[in-house]
Image (tube, rainbow, N blue to C red; front, side, top):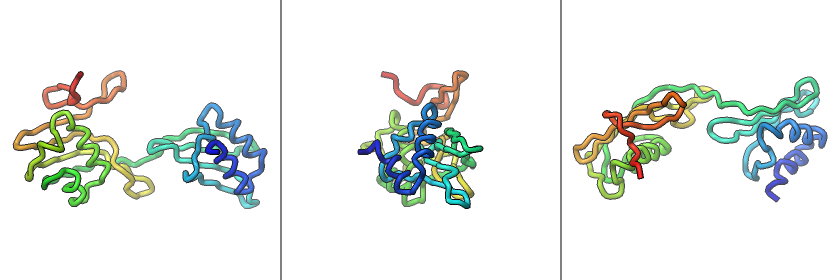
Length: 192
């Protein structure tokens, strides 16, 4: 069963049942490690005597779960992935479709999807796109260990469709809620 994946992994890697149980206990209020599914990667780190000392599991793109043996006891925690953020700008011209044009111009697929999502209320990407439409995006590029991983938040963007410019600027309010607004301070998301 899916729920047995963690137990199976521990058994297959000759991890002592006491350690497996202690990790489960330590993780109880941090992250339910039993939700790990087959096919997902868990890194196991042993000491010189081949005893498990650390377990790391990437939960999603934002954080990972770590269980560490400290003085004989297991400590579990969720840790924010320590990306290095570099502000980057990309721009391009659309030929027939935003998606294929951007990919041909070397733009990250995830960023292309974010651009389309950002302007979905202003531009019908299926019907309104014309050759010569253009875009410019300032965004947070995420790096880990010196290697580019993925795009982060879009800071500001412009999409020119049939000569009409549409803008989106990221803004975080005092409550910590983030949204996008145009140059006049109006939400870029249509209200229903």
